[in-house]
Image (cartoon, rainbow, N blue to C red; front, side, top):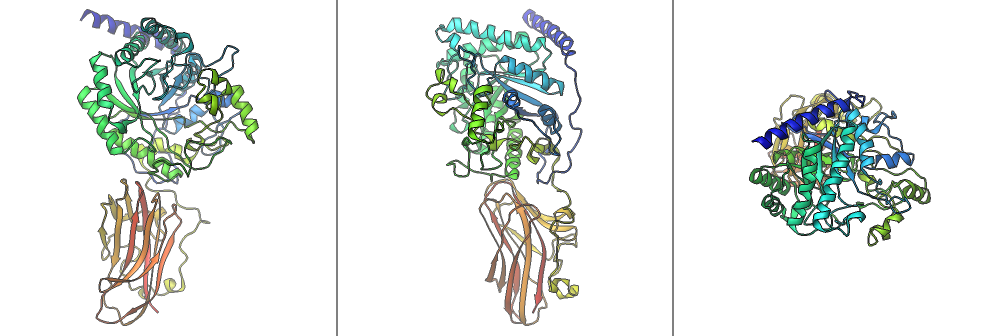
Length: 596
């Protein structure tokens, strides 16, 4: 009890000291107070999202990019501090990696932002200025640490475990003290990065936890109000319960069990939810995703190949579009919330091209300022990887900014996941709207379908058959999403392969003759899709017309002509939709059946 009281008193003292120091950072209250307007992307709100849910952004590369000449602009094209742009779009945490000494003896940086505690200090001040918290990610290495690389810093490579433990604790304390003295608002600290069975050159769990514990003690001493996080990767391999068991066995003091989750490699969202929920319930730890990203294009912009491109042999659960990028983030947020998780951090969403017009120009910037993933100087520390493949950014097509530094609409997703953007803006007058054909412009009685544009506010006499478990299949009143009028038929489904249905009508009282049928559709994020208009006689399809779903407000018609109808038979006309991607959505409108 006495220790607990002393710890609480120390925490209160540190909070008072931090509050006093923080007065040196002029604050600007720029966080959005509600739903952002003007986004053309379709986004369902995540219901029940807590106000304090973490929407983080790793922005470790920003100082090196700005030194290379990069400028950042908001969606409207206004030049601003990139951290102001982030908070205006709903980001509330900034994550920054910290390497011990990413320089050679001559002072040449290894690249990857040359991220030291001084980088964290610069970024932390800017994040605090705009009301965001800092998430400090200690790699305990001089360069990239991940499941395949956990190399000790140069200064620690010959230390035994006890000496290394002392060095790690002292280094962590000194680094965090530097941030606290400057008034940086640190909300969370990672004691290692993607430590799947290794950390700082150690590979036994007793040694790994001993090092983590040293980092944790330093955090508790300097930032007692901050959360201590551990970080692993590969949730798909089923090892997380074993990791958590080892942390408990060796008595690690920590708060948050964090994971990387990249849709290309890390399995299904269902598995992610299940494994995080297990950690949450069995071990009582908070859970969150510390790294994720998704490509908005398959193209490269800095003359250095990307990790992900159209031809990459990886899972592609979403298209490489802006809509695909926001769908990935939205669905991941839902999966984390379903596990009672506390947040999602996007990895390096500000890392774009250094700005040169040729590879040679960029190479100079990468070498001088560290704005590529690795410089040639990193070869002394990492000869097998950086020493062979050093160069530029391999994730510029996964950022939230284009190559010129202008924010993409997808950056607004951090805000709109809270509020939804189901009603997209009304198209400008010059954009395509309904231009009736001669038959459509004729007397309304010529259209032999009832409620052809769903303007009755009901679906009857249309019949929808849900073949794949599509989550939303209903009429909808949204003028901006309608081809004409205010109503249309809507579909959306978050799970892959579930958007499959038919929508049809069998008009009564038809006379014998020849008929033509037309129906329109638009939507997005359907992936591989089979869509067609059809006509049936007595339940058998006699004609089909292929259709396609591309992007919002790009309407495509399915038209069948020359349907021969004899009295006494049943004519049914409709549309069939089958889409493979999660998040597939669309709108159906303006059906017409007329006699030639």
